[in-house]
Image (cartoon, rainbow, N blue to C red; front, top):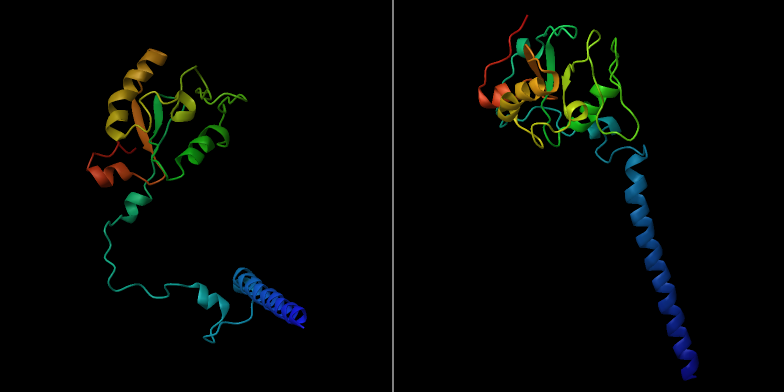
Length: 194
């Protein structure tokens, strides 16, 4: 009789273990699948309304920077056939690598950049001569050092271009994902606008 009692307890504990495991599995499954289902929100609002985390502006939020519309929408004239050079200021963790690759691979130009498989750098020459129009990691490499800042680029770019092409660039326009971030944060003068 003792033997039968043990098996009954063992069976009961195995059954409870299976039930508890199934309940845990269903809870985890519901957490992953449930939010995607349109079962309606418990608050009575629609699912789209639930997605809007901040429907009204926070009255305690104070803007740290103000960017005038004219500055955000200003246009620069760039003459690729002239002496203008785009200097790409690479800022870490802002998508700079993707944007830099896009500049050398996907921009439609009269003479596109020549990117060869297996090489990290591309040659980006002007349509009428063998001079580069782009100063970036993917066209000239890290010529001014790894993740050179605005000051380092300002001091380094003319010398590097002189060495590479034996002629200095007339104008350098900064290009960054955050428009003129260097001007807003450091108070440096803006490049001339045409």
